[in-house]
Image 1 (tube, rainbow, N blue to C red):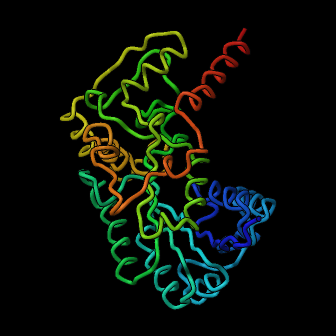
Image 2: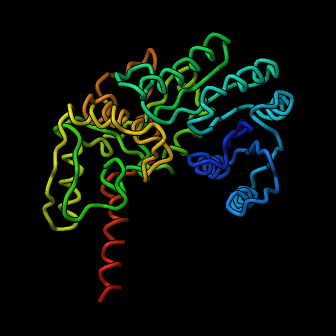
Image 3: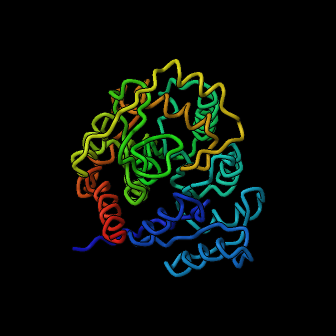
Length: 330
């Protein structure tokens, strides 16, 4: 007999942002009535207008409102069952406004704040990464203190932001001759495709196993050291790269010397913050240096084994790009 349980209605805050667009698509694809809070339903900015139109085309219902307008937040939240935040780096602390609106609305059965990175309660990052992670941890404590049902998502590295440069900070393309590796290249990192981050996230919202837990995304096939990642790429392109290892002392010097306003070419985050995060992962091993215990977390690829994705399959996309480039140059 088919299940008659109705899927939760989902409000996405930050749906026009980087990971938000993937989550919106996954939510609609999974059969959830999906709403997106937007400041302007018909923006004059062509790029923003294109994103808004894509959300409409997907079947997302747009609700005009603002993270900084309490009444609009409460009104939007009362129309749904689950709130998924995907706000950007600069707005992370402002999610306290969502917490206040959820408390007033009184109807939300799950809140997923914007994290999508390291487990912020289990990191050893240096500044400015330490302060950034602390802001996310403070938000976790606020959610817990208010008794709001939650799932915290720890997706580690977005594949689309790290694999196109083999994890190099500030890189623009996949290396074909030389690759820069932070530290000795042996600590393992986790790379998860944005589409899979979104799919795991949406699967979790109605799953009792993820209630008041951290949802970790740590697929074994996607958990590789930088040395392993480079070796995999070398095998794919049939060429050995020169590996340039940057010792931890030099990484720390670069973090301290980097301009606070300089933005990494492959990210929207400041270079020194990106370096601090990569120091946490590539040198300190913060993605995998702890055991996921059932008392606080669950692992997504174990909960949802039907989702299969590997780093090798992702890199194959770039092998084809290189092959096409060579063919077109003849």
